[in-house]
Length: 404
Image 1 (tube, one colour):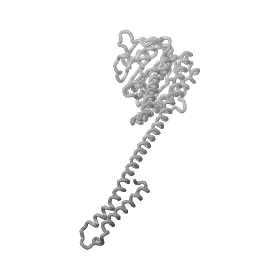
Image 2 (image 1 turned 90 degrees about the horizontal axis):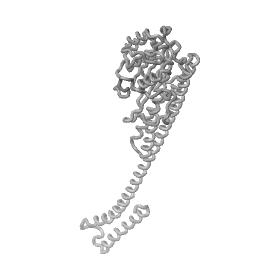
Image 3 (image 1 turned 90 degrees about the vertical axis):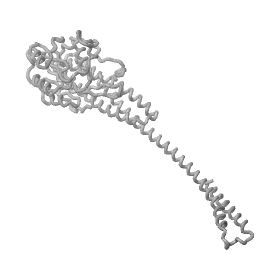
Image 4 (image 1 turned 45 degrees about the vertical axis):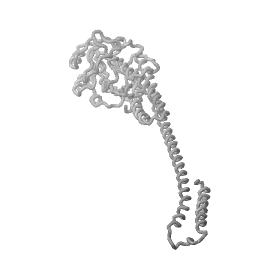
């Protein structure tokens, strides 16, 4: 790694340490109520974002195009120029003593990233990760350059789902490069807040890194609030017997897996940065800010773990309720079948009773000349008596079997 440019802020090295062991692979309605309305120490230290004079409000501007979103040069915490392109930014930084470049890109081309790599001596592996995206949250150090991958998230009210974005940050002695893949986070707001607080911005690239970390972590709070609302709605739907609730539980569980993959590695990354405080001479104010961000990460991670457990329990309860409903339906169907069988028994019994006299009457009604008992004077009473005996006998048998 070459030495910092002449006149660059050589003491503003990014804090950090070697790659933390066990880093995990990562996986968005900003509903009210995130962290109980409490703002982080970093955001309390920064004034509300204001649009720059002579420009439109950033909150109202259209979606940013791909490529270089914004590039600016700073000295002593104050913006001194806004170059139009990368080449102009490189040239202006070389001519600016004790300057710092902050370059923001969204879905950049391979050529733009390779141009940055050649100018700032970025490691090829880090550049390859930034090009391909779909990386897990991690922290890597390549010489004097720190490479950080973050997974931002935002909650979308209309579809009630979490949208994840990916952010790559290169931090060097006199530059910060951000590469976004996705809509989140809104780094323009971070830039405005930092520019409104020169005493923080003059602390150098590591101050920018901590501001970005804080913005990403604070962006999780509306997601937590939105997911909590979804879980409350799902609980209501479960006990209401909504047939579509199982699919919603499954989809939200998948999102929580991705959310957990985005948040869990942050704890190790922040511990790695904390371990580098003494080695890299990190400003004490920045140390306090980073510890505050670490507290929020712990809080978010615990909430995500709670959500996953709650969804698992809700899915179990839903399965139990569905089974109970199915058992009730099967019981009702069995009872209906039993009642139907009883009716069939009654009908069959009366049909058998009526069949006996019909059979006797049919035999003696065939009008043959030579039949037994035709000339017998007691033939008719005997036939009637036989019909009665058979009918009474069948009635008694069916009655004893509870068919009648």
